[in-house]
Length: 139
Image (spheres, one colour):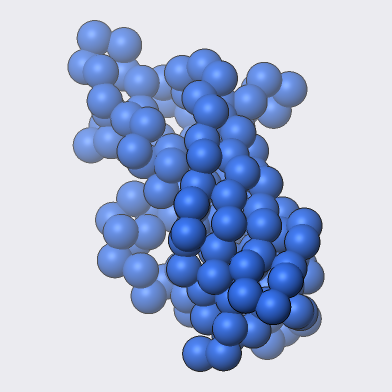
């Protein structure tokens, strides 16, 4: 697992937008990843409420899903998002970090399927949920 963790951390670190958003890899296992993103006033989408913009939430979920695919033993060494459906359940609580948990639950010869959830401190009430498809193959 150390190679998977190292590779996943390098992947996240290599993405300029993940660095700009402050994303950090928290956990990675075979077909599973957890990324966090701290609250940052630069990411506010509504100045009146202080709620983080949905685009930052979707970027976090997409990146967590990519890491989940890359860490799946059947997926190969490269991936790209084919589609990602995100359902926003509620606004993230201003001032709280976000966490995205993603699982790659099925892999075919050319497509991996994921599901993900984003939460703030209240993990019993998701901020957003996602399903998607990603390419798989050799790097």
